[in-house]
Image (cartoon, rainbow, N blue to C red; front, side):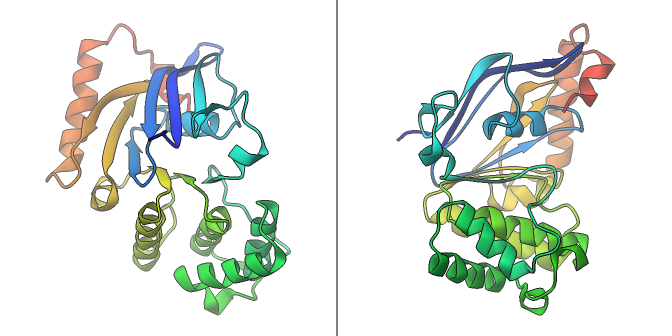
Length: 251
């Protein structure tokens, strides 16, 4: 089966900052792949490269088996993502934002309206459905961003720290949405600082550090935070000469 996403030996440098240093990973159809790491590890840079927002210095990115350099509208239409800031036109309502997001991804008018209803239900946004995005709390803007990214039922969903600003109810809704997305056969790549939370839903957990993959964690293990820091500290101890303090701020 062709991977939904493949990063191969991805390298990206900003002046003397090594954001990515040969990072390789895949996301398979129907799986939730979580990436975890300290601030500056390279997670966001990797995701931006995956969606075409950052050009690599070396290495490659493929969507559904097609190099992004060769990918066209048909490949990118199968992608949904939230990186940095959630999508949302501030002057539009929640419902209209989701409709427009669906239309931008190729849904017909009726399909987009139906998708808006589905995601308003799924993310419990009914009380704010007619509120303008600029009036929303940060947590509800995060929910709106997810709804807009997923309205067209993408085959690959990429989310950078999606639980930021979510309350416990929002985290549960997000979890259910991601599980449902993977269950219909889509690949999901998600970054998070909440190790216990991603452990509940991820098929794979990859540790990224200093711009590369340095280990994996087994979902469902106890004391994942300690295991995570063990992996990072072991790599630091073995590669102390290669790791500059500025590298941690690259992503």
